[in-house]
Amino acid sequence: MVTCRQTYMPSDPRNRSQRRIQIGCGLILVAILYAQLAMESPKPVINTGAPVVYADSPVSADPFEKQLRSDPFAGLVESRSRLIRDARDYTCTFVKQERIDGDITDEQEANVKFRSEPYSVMMEFTRNAGLANRAIYVKGKWRDESAEDESLRELAVCQPGNGLSMFIKSIKQPIHGALAKKSSRRAIDEFGFRRALDLLISFSEQAKAAGDLKLEFVGETRFDGRDVWLVRRTLPYTGPGGKYPDRVANIYVDCKHLVPVAIYTYSDVDEAPEHLLGKYEYRNVRFNVGLSESDFEPSTYGM
Image 1: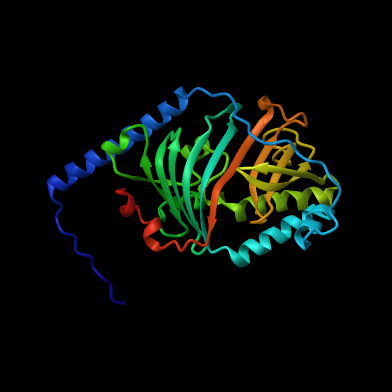
Image 2: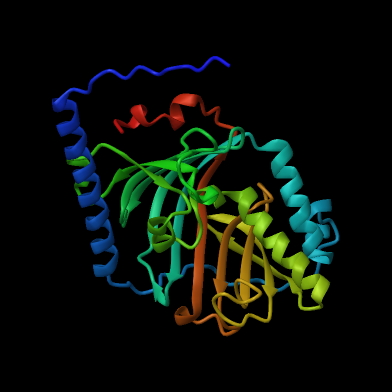
């Protein structure tokens, strides 16, 4: 049997010094990020919305509206099917506010670019950026194969917030790592209309099989200057870590795009601000704008 002998070039002491400096900067950055998380104070919940018009089904309703009114679950499934078939990419303004470890976060706002294949997300935060000014994720593009935990191998490229980008252009972080979980209830690979519908449908199927599901068409209202239909889901929520993710989910389905452009979830049926679990809004949505590889390339944004 022939054995192969590897030859190693002697390392340059200057390279070792630079490497130690880079590792030191990385450790300092992580410490600063954790400190910022610990020091952040929660802000009041910001709720928006127009009055809901409770009305009987109109005589001339289109097929999707009839379906959503008569069988909201089938309507959500149809919404997902249409999205998979028709939406290659989109841009939007994403507004998010969540309850994490018992505290409500600041309301964040980000400009987002999304592409379905390969699954790609670029978020540029414009309000209350927190840990990152920008985050870019492309499925399978950046991976840490040395991570023992498979869930920690997928990485996103992040541009640090709070002025830290002056010192470090970008840093790769596990999308399901500790920092990600401390800053959001949902990982970046759970962003978007398709993932939101997947979660809504999955838990609704589970509740339906157990006889726990209450899913009803409520009425019509307005959101972001557009006509929307309100569907409400109610589940026997028992708290964090329980069988279901929330007690109430108010799902606002755009009458033109036929996707949920806003979802508000609560831990109690009274839907008071102190019971808000998550608020997710998709504003200024534009479908099939023709996004390219460069839209999800860190160098495009100086990262």
